Image 1 (cartoon, rainbow, N blue to C red):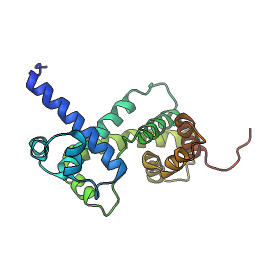
Image 2 (image 1 turned 180 degrees about the vertical axis):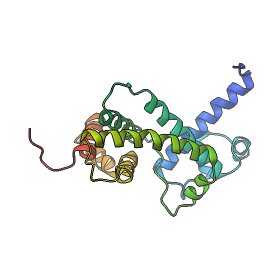
Image 3 (image 1 turned 60 degrees about the vertical axis):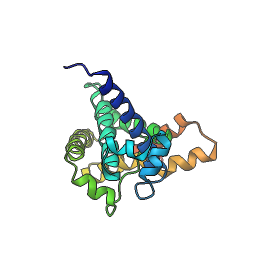
Length: 202
């Protein structure tokens, strides 16, 4: 692999800072309320300089979502091959909730959002989303086969339930209450996601 020049390293570092700011603003405000001016202000650069890296608000958001999926794939691929499928899924949910509590988990685009339309047209995002979905879908199917997840539920329902934990407002309310530590919230969300609310035999 060719070594990056100092200028390329500086550009990569600046883009990392920009995308971290985009993640925070997407998590805090959502796509519709996030502005390029706001991103530039958080990063501390002129808007014209920001446009040298990303040509539009849509490209900014798409790059942030691609970076998020890259991180998700890293977490997926770090799971031990010998681990039970349910344990792998639970690990992903724990990671996603931790990222959410840190303010680094962009809210998932709604079915009618402008962001969703931009992402659907962005091949790098779609390619990574397919890979993430295939991994998680395989684990869900295996967990259902083992009886660890209700086999009567469609895989799609389980998959979207797992995805939704990444932006679950319950974790925000629990944090605001001040009654729980972040790790306690992580475990509570993971437990209700996979064990539900019904009493289980001890």
